[in-house]
Image 1: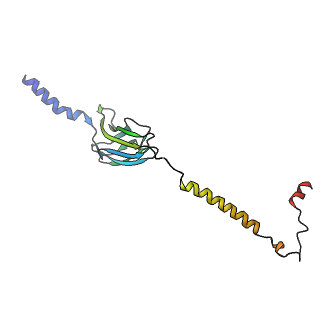
Image 2 (image 1 turned 180 degrees about the vertical axis):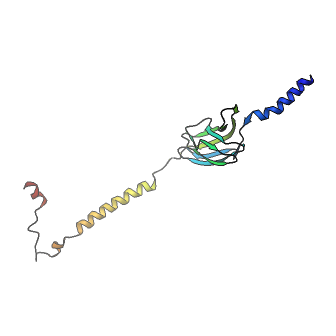
Image 3 (image 1 turned 120 degrees about the horizontal axis):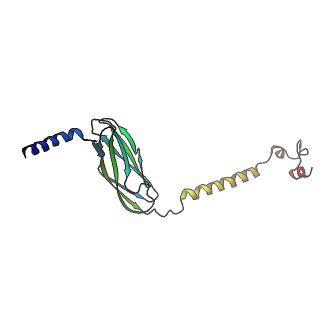
Length: 187
């Protein structure tokens, strides 16, 4: 019996030396987005490698992956390094949505058995219905200004007389040499 107890104690002391796990620190511990459908919003999280070895991190959303973008979603970090990750929410429909943002770390040394370590951050999307957009003032004003500008340009052009018309009938140097546009069609 004494030998079995000693064996269990030795095994428990030996186990931490054999199995390695990556340490992760993530802040903030929760993400909340409030926006309207069709709009987008972004927030940043900070991921830190707490282990004594370089680690590969992979990030993904458990659900609503098509509405959440993670930049970057796969990266390597050295010992004690911190990295900001941008989360962009682009919800398509209104409603209250909840999921987890999973952050998984894996040791680079593949020769030994290593355990994947991970963290899940709760993420909430409060999506309101997109407001009914009345006529956008800019979409109405710009075409109206263009129409007014075109009409003004046409009126100014018509009003402006050519230099030889200002001379009157006293000198008609070029008028009799010019052909009218309709005569050019038949010549």
